[in-house]
Amino acid sequence: MIYFTLNYLNKIKTFPYFFLTPLVYAIGNSCEEIKLAESYVSKKKKKLIILHPYSLTFFLKYRICNKSLFKDLNYYKETNFEKILKSLLNFLLDKEFVIRRIFIIFLKKFTKKNLSRYNFPIIGIEQIFGTKKDITDHRKELIEYEKIKKFFVKENNFDLNYQKNKYCEEKLKKFNLPYERLVLVHVRDDQYRKDQGRKDYRNSDINSYIESIKFLINKGYFVIRAGKKPSNKISLKDKNFLDYSTFDLQEDVLDLFLMKKAKYFIGTQSGILDLAQLFNKPILQTNMVEIFSKYPFKKNDRGIFKSMKKNNEFLSITDFIKLNYEYHNPSHEIDDLIFYENTEEQIYDSLNEFLDIQQNPILTKDQKKFNEFILSEHKLHYSNNPNQLFTEYDSLKVARLVKNSEGCLTNLNLKNLNFN
Image (cartoon, rainbow, N blue to C red; front, side, top):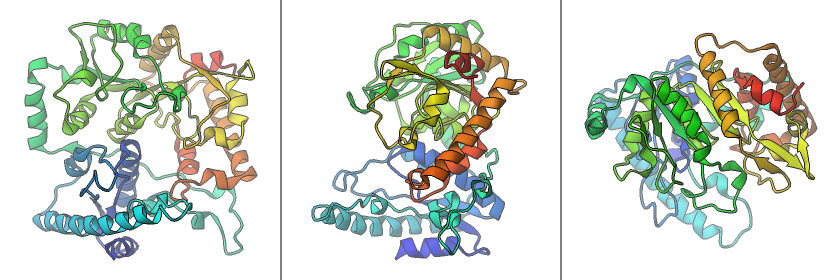
């Protein structure tokens, strides 16, 4: 009942609040949903209230990706009434979730149907992303690709409250961190999720980043390796390098605090990338394997894609993009391509390009041409098999994000991947 009520209230134009239940177990989805929702409600002149289930996580077989993301994120000053309202609604939502979740777990034993849509509340999600209904008219024909609108996205002011900031500063005091010169590096590996043999092409070796980290240190930056225990070891020791991923002091709130304080983020395509986007950080994506769903978003973002082989032949980035859309759907596993990690030299040279354009983030002629190519090919995918594009909450999310993306692969990467 509370699910229905909150979704109904969200549709009332004059109602002052907008309720959102991010996908609680996935930090990437949650950060993306919160960021887009904040832009959405600012345009509607409403206030965002984030709710989430929290009970019986072990019994109901789910985990909360980062409790601080839902409790400590500060985006406007709440009144006492709003604090009480949020607590009450969160309590009611959680209790309904428990009942629904138990029923779904029970039902899964007797049906082969995909019930993932009903696993968690998706309040507010379809409104901020759009739905299949938004792309069809009354004759059930798809609207033209050109009529799909970009997201309205503004730079937000997400922060932690004063007490949480002071708490984090005290926790990290012994490291004497120069907060104005922090760079966060994160490299996905097979340790955290213990997913050896499962989409291994998404993983990379942190040791390929050592020369780039040394370069940043020589330029006066303090580099922190982000991530959770356990992570693969890095063969680097320096007074201006901190491997936070190995620390026992890790806390959810510290993860947010360090990202908020960072000047730049360098990392692979995993959930923490969206945390960097949430806090508006300039991003250099490395060892990319997804082209549409995680393309460099802001003008000063850049990326480096992995090189690929198909049938023992190197595949150009052009030919890769033209492959059937299942190759570009993150939920599908690619088992007939071989991905090769970016070399130390490629990461180093692309980092230089990324830093050079921060003051004046303009695209070269080749980069503009490549972005136009991506948009035209995505339009072809939409025309040829649109149902493959709408898999998450029946949304238009990826189609709209492709139109929003203003960054690009580095010029060096485009050359190495034979784009012309």
